[in-house]
Length: 277
Ligand SMILES: [Zn+2]
Image (cartoon, rainbow, N blue to C red; front, top):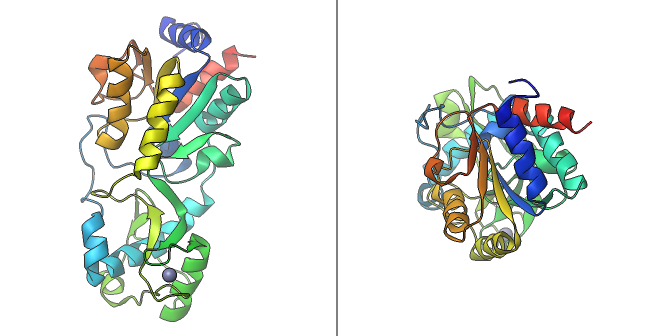
């Protein structure tokens, strides 16, 4: 895409016309930072199903498997850096072009890029929460405890998967010792919403209320396959809010958009930034 392509121009006009934009971002935004995605351009699964909320809560074997894979997958997420999309969106916020950003990503890269008003719809991978006493600890602290009690110096990832997950030797998933909360002995869970888990009601209500004050919705790098993100798009459409989208590949909301750029969101936002200078 070139700077004067009509699609980029129409997106620039859409942004100029709607200074109270609410933005929803997805995996396409983080992929160039090295974070793998669940789905291909057709919205199909690329790998095995990720862990389900109920399995994590109910089955010790599932928790062992989760933490064994997370032990190997976390270092890559913790070292990931924001890319041109995160930076462009933060710059748009600084120019008062975005009122609120809702991300379906759990990697905190928007905040690292300096974005101020961000809602982490599916939580944040850099924290671990006790399901009994609600104490929150740093994921890095959990990493140190996991390594220490298992006598591991450096975990090996055979292949990285989305959301800090990784393929590891099967033996590790069977034998890993998982620490409990140091304060109360409760179960520790990453502070994210797993598949099959629910986004907190207060978060959802807050976003609906932000949407009602917004004058437009911009979707960046998301197929909106998961209902937790799609419902905001549907709500916006029903209320007559114009919706623009930048996504490589089809989305669940294709019929609801005023403008859709079928393009890589990072390249598109980078090109848009250039036109602003
Ligand atoms: Zn606790």
